[in-house]
Image 1 (spheres, rainbow, N blue to C red):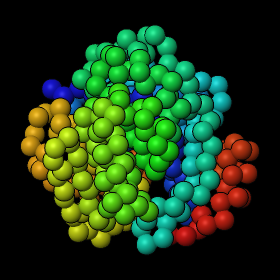
Image 2 (image 1 turned 60 degrees about the vertical axis):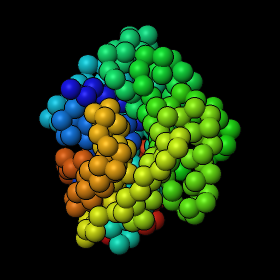
Image 3 (image 1 turned 90 degrees about the vertical axis):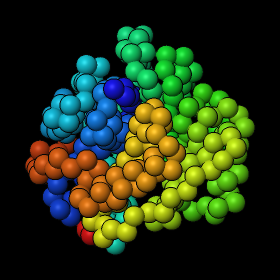
Image 4 (image 1 turned 45 degrees about the horizontal axis):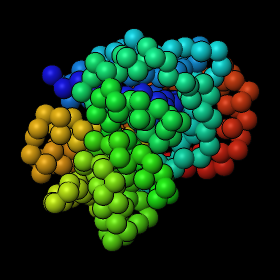
Length: 288
């Protein structure tokens, strides 16, 4: 069985126009998708002792994700306000809450029991990338972070380096992929939304088109693509087959609200003052 752990960010995505919140965050999403694809999955992270934390823990448990190393801390669970235009998600405001944490030696030892570990650039875990990669293969999501120095720092440790192609042309994305491969990444995945995706290796690149679907909500589609690609690489599937399966899975994610579903009602009367202040600053929150 493919065994993948994710360590890092989580969040509750608040769709105020719908009055609902959903578990999310790059690393949490990857852990759930891996389980849905049939792998053994674990999530290592930190949540608050609040309703949002309850939602996250319950969702992970129901998705058969190992939460042995999920800690609950004093303070708020991370949250993000989400708006939409034509089903494309818009990030309006956020607070990291207690989600940024310092891994313990016990966390690192736990990760050694998995074939691969996924980390996202928004998790604040770059200082531990080398330690994690010494325990297991490393999957790292650069997302839209594009500093060459950051790529050179993290790229040498990556089994799979993932990059969002948002706003860049083919030549720019090819140059980024070549740089990551040149500094030691084994595979580089470039996701481009409706333009499909490219999986690069040292001597060859594989391409796929996005699947045609009437999207409801694009939140989580990129994380789905990453999870299915990593899962397929560890299963030693053919790269072109991996991309096809990943495109189908990402399209399926676009058919429902929230990155992994599990909606629950937002009770504004029970929100913390920090969340309510953030809501007032999210000027676009009623766009759907």
